[in-house]
View (cartoon, helix red, strand yellow):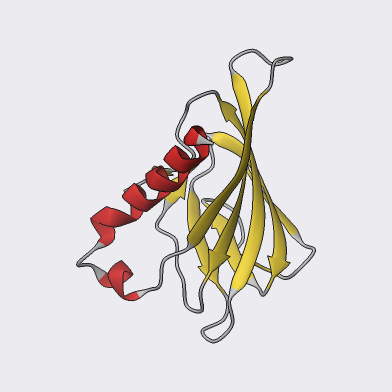
Amino acid sequence: MLRLKRIAVALAVVASPLIGTAWAAAPEAVVAPLMSKALDQFPGKEAVMITVEYPPGAVDPVHRHNASAFVYVLEGSVVMQVKGGKEVTLTPGQTFYEGPNDIHVVGRNASQTQPAKFLVLLLKDKGAPVLVPVK
């Protein structure tokens, strides 16, 4: 559980440099850690599962995960894009994938009036941060 709390803190820290910029006006995503599990059959790897809720108008900063990230939309609609890929709008039941080398250039709620929520499963190096900002 302590590791999951660190994940939430790490995600909050990523947003802190954005205070005072145009990003500060957009509502922040709410991240809820669900579980973290060492993958003994893959030494040095772990799985982390989180939910992300975008309030209306929420926008993520440009970032990467240095992990395989599997996204499943639960509610609302979200807009996602990795560098070099097409921007896509996803609705409940649709999925999105980010590879370890992908830079997530677009992540936002498609709606200015309705919330959106998605589940993320990350397969990553044990102890590595969940999210790394990219300038």
